[in-house]
Length: 231
Figure 1 (cartoon, rainbow, N blue to C red):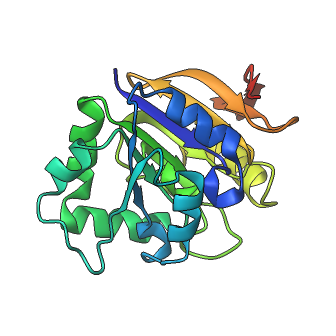
Figure 2: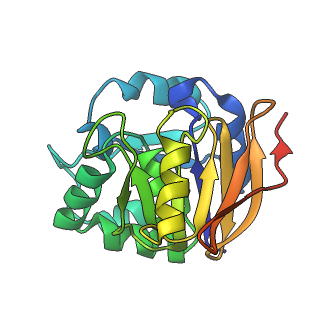
């Protein structure tokens, strides 16, 4: 089963153990192997302590795959040996460019095809879709990006309630056809994608929502999804 968890915002980088717990529930490994990719933040080392606090050594085998000072030769074998690959937030455009230069894009697709759970927040959620909105080009903006990995059809927008530019930009972009129909998630909400189809929407906090956004005539249709609250 091919699984992705795309978070609008949340997870261990936002002190959100409930969404992390949901990701872990998707693997039956007794001692999960979790690899974190901090490429979108320029391989910033600050996430290492948070990773190990969320997934302590007593119960998990954690690793961090850095590409700016790369030490792993066979990325396909390394990522395929994980139970969960977790991608952090930051600059989606730069992350995808670095991934493609190193062949991480192909390695992630192979890992997904063989059952490794892929998860991520913000840029780490954008990347799995064909397209997304991003502030990679200019902070505070919400520009279209049309060259995601394409594991999931359509577009994704994170931080739907957390950044003022996101929602109006999505409506304008989808309504004009500049961005394909897709999904949007508030902070602390996430989509569970199974075999490239959205199966479920979950949230770790009350009021966090997920939406299907589609072009409709000269405008857009925004439909709230049923969101399952995580305990």
